Amino acid sequence: MILSGLGIKEHIGREIIIEPFDESRLNPNSYNLSLHNELLVYTRETLDMKHNNPSEKLLIPPQGLILTPGKLYLGRTSEYTKTEGYIPMLEGRSSVGRLGICIHVTAGFGDVGFAGYWTLELFCVQPVRIYAGVQIAQIYYHTISEPYERYTSGKYQNNKGIQASMLFKEFAL
Image 1 (cartoon, one colour):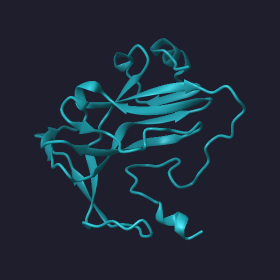
Image 2 (cartoon, one colour):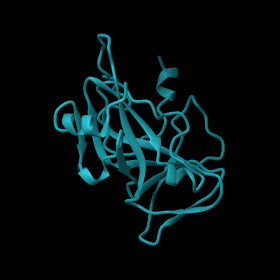
Image 3 (cartoon, rainbow, N blue to C red):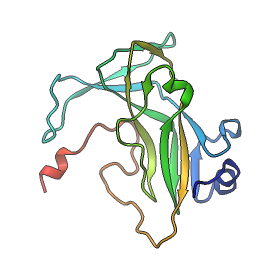
Image 4 (spheres, rainbow, N blue to C red):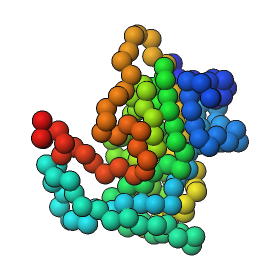
């Protein structure tokens, strides 16, 4: 089952942490998260899974930033989230999708116990201007019915900002 907006509100501050929390962003079964003003872009045209691919930071200026089709922009939510006892999931808002902006390639699935900022994998269908602070994504929560082990991976847990792929660490094992 998916928690309703009222269910999310009931668990805020306990099993569900969203900081900062603004009740006006609560939907019937989700909560809107906003885009931070920092982005990362990879500096090489060809990426290599076995290596830590170099990237550079971009700031979204007050007048906005035009995203280019065919380019991946890593962003993050302005909100820190932490979840215990529920499975957090992230999707783009329909109003954002109707502009041809995708907020994740495959990473919309969270783990029970995840704590941190959500890294967004932004790409667009046609050039589009984006702005920091826009409510770009919605988080929702699935219940879990069986005993579980909480997420404790050091790779992305308790992050402080945008996280580029760390897949290269798995090749070193």
